[in-house]
Length: 135
Image (cartoon, rainbow, N blue to C red; front, top):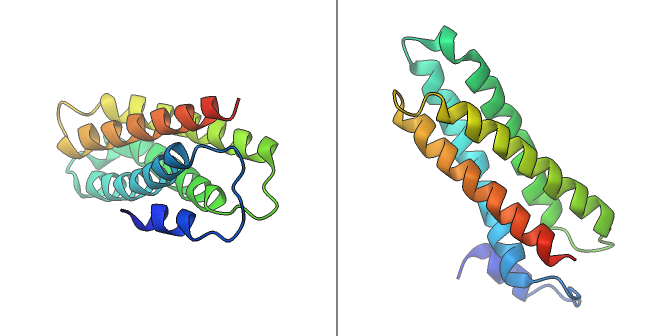
């Protein structure tokens, strides 16, 4: 069991109709993606061809900020606003899609970009799954 699941289990109020499994998976995917994108941006900065990776680094860092914010917002449940949750999930999906597409362009040359694209696609999927479960 992850800390995400543990924290959801001890939340003192009813979480309502939200799918706890999908919520936990999405929160974890957001934080995993933020870490992976941070590491990818750092690895890109270490590449000899760093000037050619400027857009990749920028996209990574944008994805980091959005995924981290989404993970934090999805971890808060007091006074939850469904409209904000949907907006955050859509924004995170969009950032992950853009980052996955950018990293995929460099994946054949840089394993870190390949791994980052995978993490972004996983997070995009987790956000889509949670969003669909919200109705």
